[in-house]
Image 1 (cartoon, rainbow over the protein chains, first blue to last red):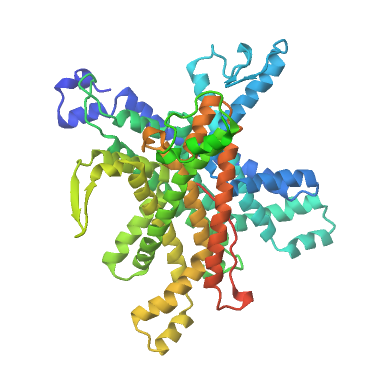
Image 2: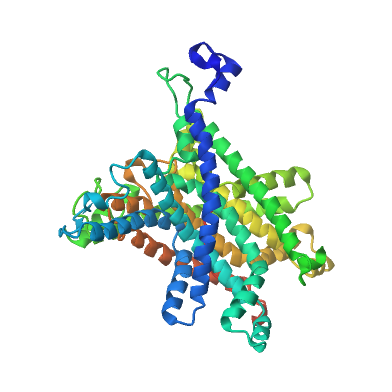
Length: 288
Length: 279
């Protein structure tokens, strides 16, 4: 990075450190913090969409859709979510490859599951074996993102369906009395009013989503946990910058990063909640 | 090989008894069921001990957060903030790496009748190191629940105790603590389920599964890797966890009944199973 970094062996103290923290690998480490933020920015709306659909489905009048919706919201309660994080990316990957196999190579008649192997034709592989490195990265990240969206969608769905149930019945009946169709009641009365009831649950979920991001590591993404392990490990004299086992310090930095993130989020959410409570006929609203 | 033989071979595999080698090829459903079930021993071990110690420690922390005494209040707040504000996953990694760089020492603990050598390298093993992290983590979460309940104890109850001339100690033991527990119990039930599910993280972090002695999800991911078929082992783990979650709910609702015994039926609080979320 700096010019005096050309010969790391001759450096001491501050200069050594300034060169050490600007190596290309450290740059990847810093970028991975952005990856975490990026995941948060994408997973939150995705989970919202999944959750909204789940909540609507669980209130549907068609019993088939209702069962699917309720099942989706309920499954997350008894089973550790990490099971889903491990299961969904593999299952999705296999589902995609299975579909592509059926469409792209109909001439292959051999079974896909052969004992302990999952065999699809070359053209059906995802991503293609000829694809470049970044395609693999993007594909892996997308699978992880879908897993986050799916799991947190179920959480969000629970919060939203609770919030929908909390909107006073008389409000909805007023809509019906004015001759609103059930679609109009949903759009004009139920959805606008449910947010204040959903807010505590949603802000709780946001904090939990932040704290779930290191699970990216389990999904094989080169995230902050990966880099902390990689960079912190003992570097012998073979390396340009040799140092003993510093993993504890690197993970300490991650701890501080997450504590800051949750702290700032908490401040922001507290402010938002007091803003939304303004003018409401609740204890929080009257206290303002 | 019959399924009975498999149970003999792998039933206690996760704690080191029975067959040494894990099944490698021609994996049967029975083997998956038994080995994953065997792994549940670790999940239950972590959950029970962490909850037990955490229950005691969190009461102290909750009192600390509620205390006016600065030297007691501040450390409690900081402890709760650190363990609730950062991911458990990172806590495991951080603690493990800290334990690794600790000097390797042995202390002789002389308890009169028996001398036990306590070694710091035990901390790098999951059975102690991960247990400590889980213990601290659940203590922080539970303390926050208890703190909330402590603040919600009706002032009338305390005034009644005062007018009966209870001293501070008796007031806490007879009035404040039982009421706090009663108010906190539904949320605490959730926390217990939550912690039980969090035990699945242990062997995915720094803590190594020595001689392939791991928990349920460790074996499940082993099978998913070997058979390249996630549709069998993960549902099995899910099934086991649902069963034990129901068991926890059953046990905790017994306690809940006892805590609410003196109240009118309309005033009793019922357990409501709420979300279980990653911490």
